[in-house]
Amino acid sequence: MKITVETIVKAPIDHVWRTYTTPADIKQWNAASSDWHTTAATVDLREGGAFSSRMEAKDGSFGFDFAGTYTKIVTNERIEYAFGDRAAQIEFNQHAHGVTVRITFDGETTHSVEQQQSGWQAIVENFARHAEATQPR
Image 1 (cartoon, one colour):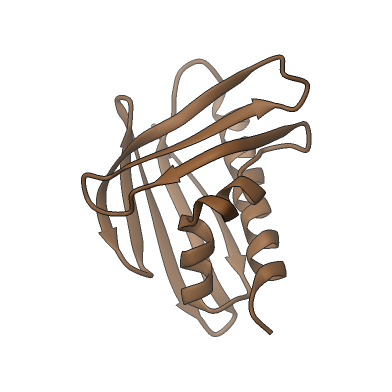
Image 2 (cartoon, rainbow, N blue to C red):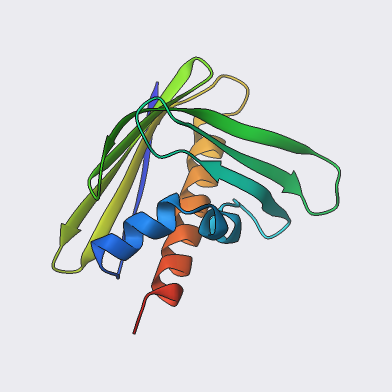
């Protein structure tokens, strides 16, 4: 089952792309709720390159590595990756109101579709807020 989330970022495409793919920025926005954070991130942004984000509960009770391999990169337009036996694609579409960032991913069976969609939506909304707040003036 495919699940899609999206947001509009009011910032230039170059900034949106860079903010989405830079480890220091990823650590700032990559969390679904305020009681979680990303403590480490690595990005080898090329087809066949690996990525990893260490996501942890702030109270230290749980953590996991969200990691995978990039399968397609089109700068300022598209990122595709595999993580485990699942895949995701991120589209960056520039328009007059900013950049629509749309993520479509393979769902898993442990959590409901609604839980997965709300978690990924919260992350992409955090991304939009961070990208807008850090854009050059």
